[in-house]
Image (cartoon, rainbow, N blue to C red; front, side, top):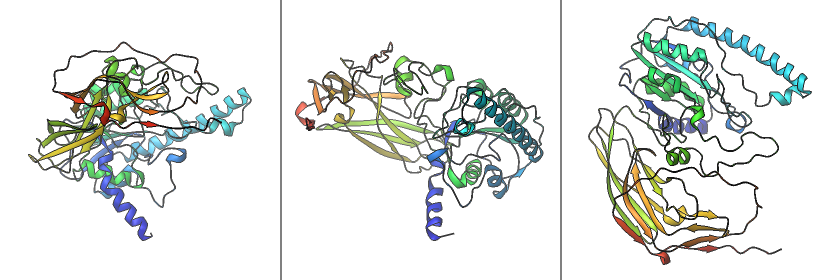
Length: 446
């Protein structure tokens, strides 16, 4: 192995745990030491290290979860289960290819073209949950990426019937159980949320994915990532727009994608945008908000109130005035992560953003605009758990950037939902209009 490869691996290892998200934590983990472990699920051996297409890379080696656990000293008690699952998967893949060829023939299409991006859903089976030990994991893997979009079907975005059965049975059988999600995007976990106490989004961590999970289970690393997408039941997401249309797709959902939809209409997600727990706990106390021109500085103190060292992410959201332009409930304006804090240790964080960066596009004016009114600054640890700390008041409309219309009328109107309303009591800070830089782009009329 070349020296630059070793350097890349060392750099990679430093950030792996920070790319994982702990969704639920009862306190059963971390484990004191490696021992017997019952490892179930399609991702134990068929671990996903990256996405499809440009999301995948060729690598010199890859450590799957089975290998990572064993190299860390764990003894897997589910070897027979894993062997039996390999046979189930092999037979299911044969049938999947057979069905794909039949469908291609029926539609008079090239089977190789139809096979590009086709992903086999997780197969159903009746393999038992009977391995020994008092600690278990279920590794749920999903592949996706360029050319391989997810589908709201069982065994893909949704759990298969077998996965629901097994997760519930494992929860009942083993004293310590963690559900591990090895996927590049959300999975609808709503059927089992009340049946699982510990959930880790391992994500897709590259060549040392197996090592990373072992270190997290043993507490050598502490998960400290945050969700970059909202996790909810499949039918809770915004249903506007057309998805996957080959000839003409109308994005009628407009700005209401992800947390901007959930936070605006008030629909409760299973896990909101920016959410992420830790083996420890934190307390965030908002501090001062200051204005320098249109540069806003938000300070807060973060204290580790738990028993383990760990990191927390301070998040700043801004709610814009409800004017002529449609606005979501709030937008993420900035964030900052603490260093690794020891129990009872505190760190003062400061997050800065410029108000002009929050300007919205007006198709009528062909410009990016800050409308007059109140810009509410919120501090928290995710998009739902926030506290209003300041109101930035702008008296006049400001055009921050004048552009040119390049696309015609789309032929439809964007979706505008009924919005939840809240009353905010916070200090008011005035923003002077002449403190905001503006830009006019000149175009060649030809």
